[in-house]
Length: 119
Image (cartoon, rainbow, N blue to C red; front, side, top):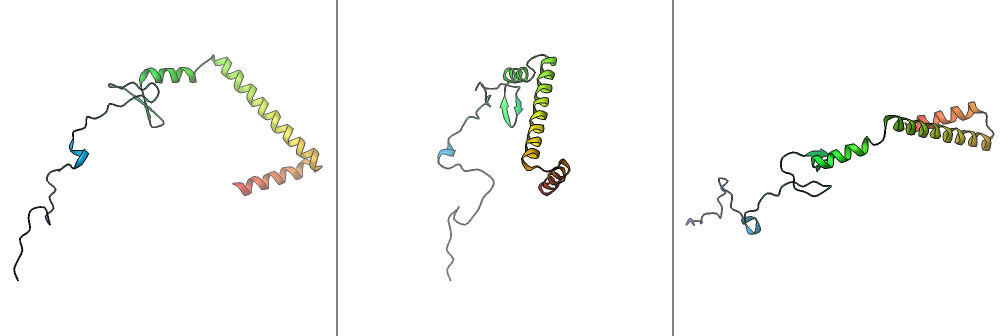
């Protein structure tokens, strides 16, 4: 049988160099990262917040918003909200107790069993 010669590239694989095809052939400049808040390009220093890149001025604004107000004001707000949540929970508990007419020990056992089933 006669052997047929094949041209280069038909059955030969080469991995020594890249041969770009189509749009990939044009050189593309790497885009500089941008801040997701202000959309300014980031030159050298950046921060990551939840896998998003932010610049130092935007980070400073974010931290200032978190630390807004005095320490006493934040403590008073947290205390007030905690008391309100406790009062709301107590009102729900006594409302269920009043509607069901069951003693509190039965309700306590029932809520404990419900919590155990969920967990």
